[in-house]
Image (cartoon, rainbow, N blue to C red; front, side, top):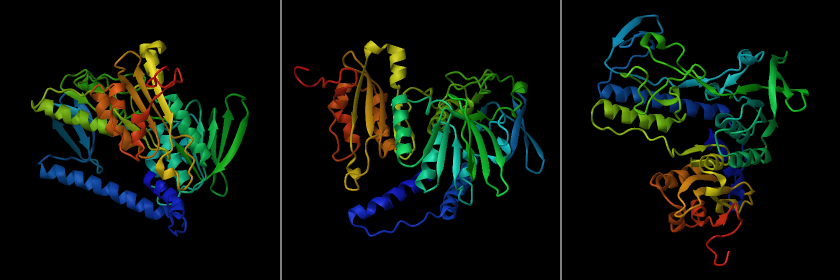
Length: 425
């Protein structure tokens, strides 16, 4: 859906490059059908691969009976008992509903639901400030829908806050309405079927209302642990988050029971991270390897209209860990070549590299805001994982005219405002 929104922007740009292309209205139903068919094909492909590898697959909801046994219940209510020497919990999480808000559960949807809507959601209010909230709001705006984001405190809390501000600034400039410092009080259905939302501005305590076709809650996720009867197996969880406590081996408080992915405490909520953790765990259980999952310097990308890719520490984390006097930040605004001909605004395209100040200036984090951020970040993540220094990155030859080459041209220190490579500065 993010790609669908980007294509809309490309159609708009096409006329500047000589293409006579009309801007047609977007067909939500056709896009949704294609997306849903793709997801269904993925699920079917996994089933086939399991069968080919002689892995028994049971489609039921399971819960623990004791530390070595689970009971599975099928859709028809039939029970099956399974026992094993080792058990892996990888149930993930579900979007959270703010049940304390009147009408939230009855009239709202979540990020899980929007991908299965057969009809356009129309004018939409997205409540939340996470990457899920901003990604959904971004592609809805890109598809031409009237979209509002309601943010209670700060956007992208777990990310670098300067980059987060640039992300929301770009979204606001390009059509997404952002309500900051507000929280919803109730949702009501009107006689015409639309939804009236009442909210309060936390700074002024002033109430306001708005009418929407859809209200999408993106206020966090909860792990799927409550129905697992973990207490019968002796598996401990964090009482606040309900996530399962694990060690470096991914083992729970019961040594032969493991947990990977979003359901585990202190793990990044990222699909590729869970996949690698699962692969390494399988290799250890089969005695093929003793390698542990390394959760440092895991790259990720927020797929907002202007993509934000990062790996390593944020500027705030680096300062907190090492002290401001030991941190150097190199940064630059830049203009992607593909923005030039259509005269796109590039005022939020920005890169910064967070380094230790003392030579050889180890790179602590890289933050990239611009087109194809995921592709750029993935490449530099390898170097940072291998302990790259600022000097090594500066000796890397950029591929012209890519956005990625801008990383190898970072010369300006954010702290001093000077180019340290220029003699006499």
